[in-house]
Image 1 (tube, rainbow, N blue to C red):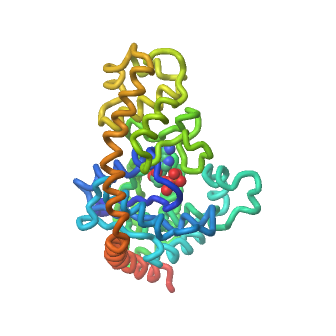
Image 2: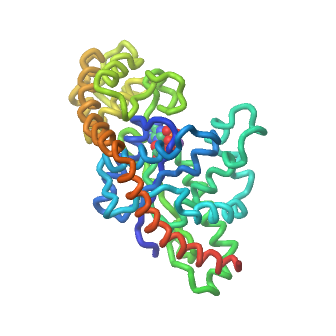
Length: 350
Ligand code: ADP
Ligand code: NA
């Protein structure tokens, strides 16, 4: 069976927000205690939707700084940027030939990001999930902590791994490179694992503070819709006070949160930030008005985010230090990636 390994990536586009923190980075920090981890700044993904960026390098550094400021240990684990390991592109090409166009066309993220003028979207945007599968499978990662929005891409990663394992089964067997694994009840052999997403938690999808039906996103034109990792205490307080809510007080039970997306979102965020369950939050605030809950919420958000923001800024003041961490991480990632690619080339017959 495959050795447990955690992999995840974050794009260096725009400001990190609370959704990225709760959906991804906070989980990375918890997972690193018990698992071997690889955390990647996926700079090659960031040119799929927008080709030209003013300062991609600075954006890349700021994501690496956020990882480290949040508590990721870049000595024990690998922190690197995707473009420094060319094997990501090489394996993605092979996966482009494994995956089917129909699979890509069904991706909701592609439909959202391409918008109405789909013919004019970049080919890279369509093939984004192939590159994501390559990111993960290059390290034969078994677990990927992500937000709920990435669930479909993780399913596609499994589809690609499975099709590769099946299409090349004879050659994998002949090369002796197969690994036994359980797929459901069945024991099979293959080269790539069936990677599991790690999505659970009280806030798997953090929603916009202005519209409880839309996910919090860096592409939302309203800055009031999201809390950025770089917002100061006053801004965080103002955004939470202004968050859209309904007039009823908070309920006592989780059932009564149904149909109240804004209340549900704030309770989920509070629970995630305080490491409590949503029911524990309702035990404390059920029956109270938002005028009571919101200030407590803002205080908590500031208490959690302020030290991270401060540490991020301290790290960002020394770009050469972050670059050295990324270079060292890329070297370690490259060693693993090259081993995988040697196997893959042998399996394909290059
Ligand atoms: P974005 O989705 O903001 O463009 P990325 O695609 O780089 O950012 O995603 C980085 C991580 O943050 C992914 O694991 C993604 O699932 C997670 N994430 C992004 N937005 C949210 C959200 N609103 N709620 C929960 N997790 C999120
Ligand atoms: Na995303």
